[in-house]
Image 1 (tube, rainbow, N blue to C red):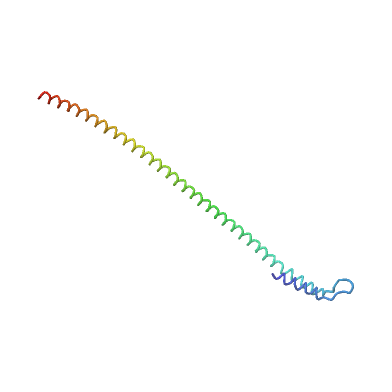
Image 2 (image 1 turned 30 degrees about the vertical axis):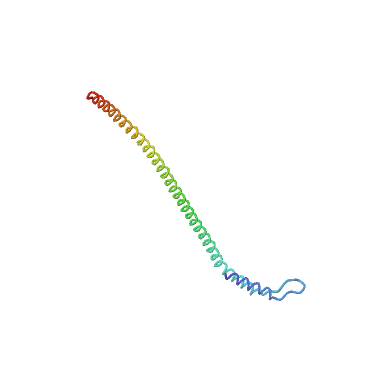
Length: 145
């Protein structure tokens, strides 16, 4: 900033100026000091404008960074929610598949038991029929003797 250079010049002028003995004061060239002050007044608005621009630019960058951070957070939250939903869907699918398998196994057991009972019933009837036939054959053989 140019104003800092002007201030350094003013400071140098004060340090190099002759001092008044026993007072701690110094003699300064009025015209030179007034010229430096005039130069400061001319440069000050530019520096203030530049400082204001820097401040506004800083604020704009901070707001943009905050917006971007918020967007990143929202994206992350959406991704997490999606993954949780996907996990829940997968979990429910596994639960449903386990229920279907259990139901199928139960139905298979019932069908097996039903088939055994049916086969036992058919064999029992065949046995009864064969027993009757054997008895008829025995009776017929005895008649033949």
